[in-house]
Structures are given as C-alpha cells and as structure tokens.
Amino acid sequence: MRIVLQRSKDAKVTVNGEVVGEIDKGFVLLVGITHDDTVEDAKYLADKIAYLRVFEDEEGKMNKSILDEKGSVLSVSQFTLYGDTRKGRRPNFMNAAKPDYAKNLYNEFNDLLRAHDLKVETGEFGAMMDVQLINDGPVTLILDSK
Image 1 (cartoon, rainbow, N blue to C red):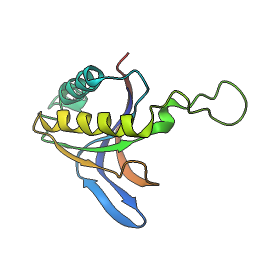
Image 2 (image 1 turned 90 degrees about the vertical axis):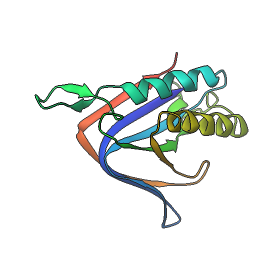
Image 3 (image 1 turned 45 degrees about the horizontal axis):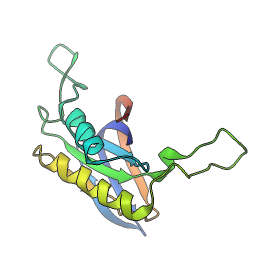
C-alpha cells in the first residue's frame, strides 16, 4: 500500500457537486493499493498513521499524533498512486490492484483506522472526486507498507 498523507486544517471531497466526506483538523490520505497488499499492510499503515508524530507540541516540535490532537481522517482511494510513468507519455496502471480487491482492502484499512478511535470520512470508491484541503504546514509525507 502507498499513501500520500497531508496534514490539513480542513478538507472535503465532493462527488457530482455533493459533499460525501468532510473533516476539520487532521489528515487527508490518498490511498493506493497494489496486487500483493494484504490486511497486514493495511494494519501496519493504520498503526503508523495513528501514532505518527507530525503535530507540534508547545515548543513547536513535531511530537504529537493525530490521536493526541483528536484529529480526523479524510481517506480517499487513489489508484493512480501506482501509475508507472517510466515508459512513454501515458501512465500504466497495471500495478494498481483490481477494483474489487482494492475496495475490500481500502474498507478494511478505514475500519482499522476507526479501531484507533479516529473519526474517518471517505470519498466514494471508484468515483470521479474533487478533493479540497488546506494543507497545514505544509506537511506532506509518502508512506509505503513495503
């Protein structure tokens, strides 16, 4: 699994002009899944995200987690994270998992985040989505379960 994590002040995702997920302070996660990802990959990343210290403490150091800050998560499925652009001018998406497999693992990943008592909002799997956020910092990290 590959995730682009952005610390945000607020964020929302819309489908056909309708808001389907919205958060205040927290993380926006763009979540990509490949063929050989498993529940263990999802668990590893859910645990990593829950305890990742990227919020400032009173001294301005990144010492607080999203749990410490009582933040929320906006999780958006993003198969294009496995786009291969090394050859030609059009991305090859052969490394992205098939939709049924990816959807099940994506839902499991979100449930694992919720098991940490995180509020998790999502986009709509497989839909064309508009994602808006105010990137706080900006803080953007790439996480990979491999």
